Figure 1 (tube, helix red, strand yellow):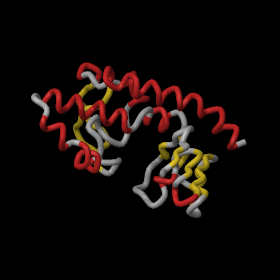
Figure 2 (cartoon, one colour):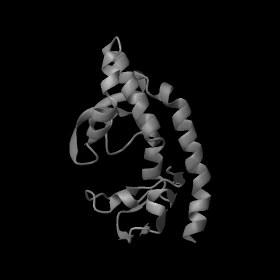
Figure 3 (tube, helix red, strand yellow):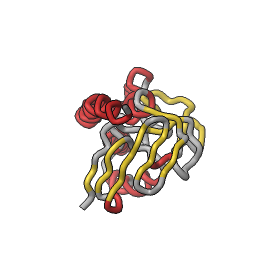
Length: 168
């Protein structure tokens, strides 16, 4: 049954992922955002930030604001400061974060499971979802749930229906 659920949700997650990447430059425009309180730094902090409006929540990362987590900022923001205006720096940051986490809110709200389960290194399961990793992470199939194990306590696991990747 759990494999049927994955097969049923995979096309939906793929569609949301493709839409996220295609529309990221539009969704990142300033008038789609509002300043409010919310989770930041991968759910370890709560504070004021810039978040997508409610009707675009499927594209928002619920555990970070529009500019991403601290690791993302350090690794990917440096080149942006060479852009001519602060508005362009912020816009490029929002586009990059949306493309880095396509459909993350959809995965957390629609395709999610409680962060309780088991992980033996190759096979993880939580709330009826599963993730199979082989050959040292070169093949990864299933729901993206492994990050919930050993991390900060979360109410739900972000779980992507289509998490097939090949690392070279």
